[in-house]
Length: 177
Image 1 (tube, rainbow, N blue to C red):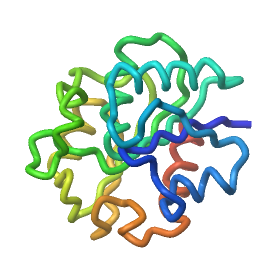
Image 2: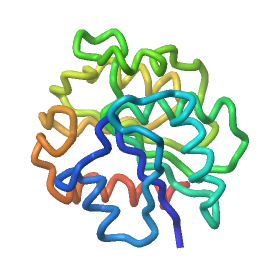
Image 3: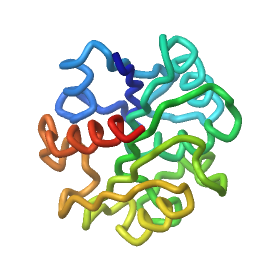
């Protein structure tokens, strides 16, 4: 069985968010647990991700949204723990006017390819990261790129529900890894 680590962005992805819905529907999906969802601390989030990967019974698939996409880029540079793949949804642009100041510790994104298969997913109207930014991130990280249409930040406010299209993208990523 493939194991998954759910990595919400700031705020923790509430009950209507597709990440929470996926986690509720699949016992192989577990959420990482930093000390604070509302005041993200990079050091704490890195430690929480490391702990979650250590606890996984096999190399997991990371399912990241928003700020946690940047977390994955930082973590994979400092950890050698194996990961099967990463789905990176709604990658935020730290230079965007709406990027939160509490996230600035995540903003200096390490350069280079990710050390595992990955897919960056963006919408055509994400206020936190334009499609051209997502395309550039995907290129730098050696990731595939999926542009899904006008769904904002691909969060609960976007009305994604269970987001079956996203689950199909995840399934494809896992199958190819």
